[in-house]
Length: 337
Image (tube, rainbow, N blue to C red):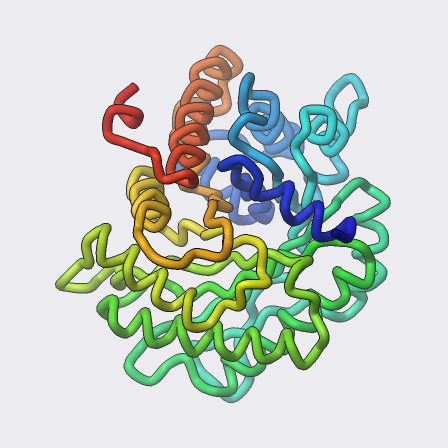
C-alpha cells in the first residue's frame, strides 16, 4: 500500500470521520454574528482550538479540514494548530478551492475556481503539515438543471485538482455536492446524483487519478428542503446506496458523506441507516461533517471562556454519535445519553 493509500485508510479507520472546519472567514463570521460572537482571527482560532482539544475527540475524529487562515495560526504559546492536531493523532487537511463562481452562459449555475497556481499552493500546504486536501463542486437541482456544461466543467476541475494533489503527495477528497435546496423529490435527487457521479468518475479516469489514493465526499440522496413529500430515513439509505453501487468503483477506499444542510441528528440517523442496510458495500462509509458536527458546540460556546467545557461536551457527544453511526450501531438511547 502506498503512503497516500495508507493515509486514505487512516482517515476512515475504526468508525472515525473527518471534522470539516474549513469555513471561509466570511462564512464563519456569519455564524458568529448570528450568536453575537465577535469574529476576529483570535476568536476563530480559539473556536477551532476548542474543537481540536476536546478530550476524547481523537477516538471519533480522524482528520480535520482547515482553511488557509487556520492552517497558519498558532496558539498564544506559539504552537501551530496543525501541530496540535498531529500530536493528538488527528490528520491535518486543507480546503484548496477558491469557491463557486457563476458559470458563464449558464444562469443559476456555478463552477469552482482555484486551479491557477494550485500546484504551488499544494507544495506550501504540505510543508505546513497538510496530508490531504478538499475541493467542493456544487450542482443546483431543478427540472432542467444541472446542465451538461455544469457537469463537465466541475468534473474536469475536480479531476485536475485530484491529480495535482496526488502529484504532491496529498490525498484528494473529491466533493461533488448536489444541493438539497428546492422543491424536488428524492427521485430527482437520485437522478442528478447519478449523473454527477458518473461524470466525475469518467473525468477522474481520463486524468489518471488513482482511486485507491482518494476519498469521495458526496451528498446523501435526500428530498429537497422545500419538497412536499420528504423521504424517510430508510428511503434515503436505499437511494444513496443504489447510486453508490451503480457509479462509485470499489477501488475507492471510503465515502465520507457531507451533511449538506441536514440537522445534526438527522445526518447521524441517515448515516446509521446507510451502514445498517443490507447488501454490497465495498467502501467504508463515514462522515465529513461541518455544521452537523459543530452546531451544538458553537451555540453552547457563544464566544465565552466559561462555556468551553460545556461546548466541548456537546462536540464530544455529536462526534461519538456519528462514529457509532459509521459502524451502524447508533441508537436513540445513545443519542439521549
